[in-house]
Length: 82
Image (cartoon, rainbow, N blue to C red; front, side, top):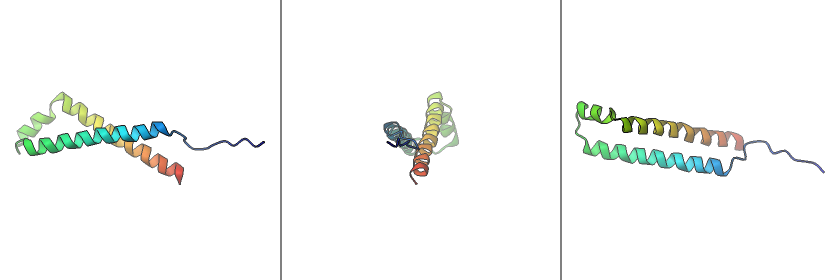
């Protein structure tokens, strides 16, 4: 009997969950920024005060990390499939 070894990832559910979680994070960040864009005065000081808040800095960093993870999983899966 020939034993087949699967090459590639076979990550499956973990990749699917990662793609969905990062997409939700990016969606929430985009919606928050759009709301702020339309409600905050168009002055530099208002935007500076907004982006100097700790929660905005953390949320921005988490969102950038989500973009990189989302892209990494997507490109890696394309690379392994084709």
